[in-house]
Length: 488
Image (cartoon, rainbow, N blue to C red; front, side, top):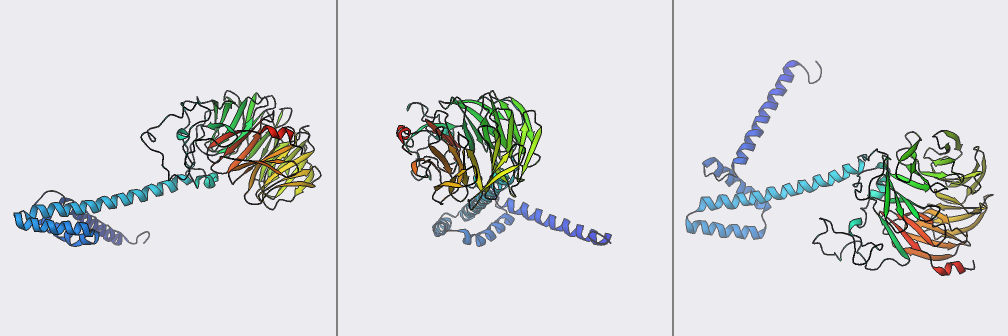
């Protein structure tokens, strides 16, 4: 006695299953024969039964048509043939409607399952030519917030301000013959946003990070599509860095501008040549690497992880120091300009200052929620932080608050100092980039992103500002010339 019971009981169950299966098969065969142009008695009886059941699916208009058909049948003497045709048409329409309903339900469930399906990104460490753009990847558990809405407008349909007006983006099979829809949630505008001079289009999902090269002639971006990309200052894609198996959270240039480092949700940081060759992989186990930074001499890397630690590495992939003190995830790391200290930002609402041996020097408390980003001023005398409480803050290195930037409406994800230290830029989840003077006064607001802005970066000459957004686009802004005369 086990499983379904005794042998006799299992036999009885099998017999019942066979009988039930045969009954269902016979019913299916009979049901299927009803749609054939057969005038036999069996088919006629089945159609008559269907005609009795069909009124619940028939609209008043169809009912009127039915009445006219019956009248015509009596007048012409072709009752059986017309009755079968009309009734089979009604049933066919009912079946088609049911099929459409189930197809729509299946499509919706497929979309739900794709959200939870781990993406399959290419593993090769070589660059991909820009003409062969990596297709869009579906799913990423860490990116559910980003998947809540689709990218606002496909990149192929956006007019590029990098091209002459007569050389707009080429049409695709999906867009050919389609007129602009004035009801679109994000209607296209003929004029680019004020101050915008470039757009970098190519990532298939959110762009998480953007950085200028030390000479200002190249720009790097990192995206949720699992790639980092290199661009020239005219907005043309030069190379793709393919190797991360999941989203790439951050990208930075080495101080000499000859290499790139990336941080990924696959638990690795990676070192790259500018042509896309992968040089080294720094493994943090199965935990994501949220941020990566080069030391000023280019000989060390620092990484931030969700296990509450930051780590120091040499360029051979050896782990040198572990910084422990945050009691929740570490989101951001930054080296001081002299290379002697490291700053970290954490989900515990604090920023912290360390020696490179791992000794904690100061704790910066003031944000009411997670601290997403931390940056040193160019002279190394101040720190700036960005927080989930909707503010950015300026600090002395002793932990004293000097100024607060923000209105507490939406989270501030990133903060950056201008090269002359006179201004700070912030990236907000309300879709704006804001420029502030160092006393906390708002100077300029840059609007153009259709979703959250994740990253900001100043060009080394201070004339341009780059931003990266959840709309899948990085944008370049020209700073107003009047800023150079700002007395603050």
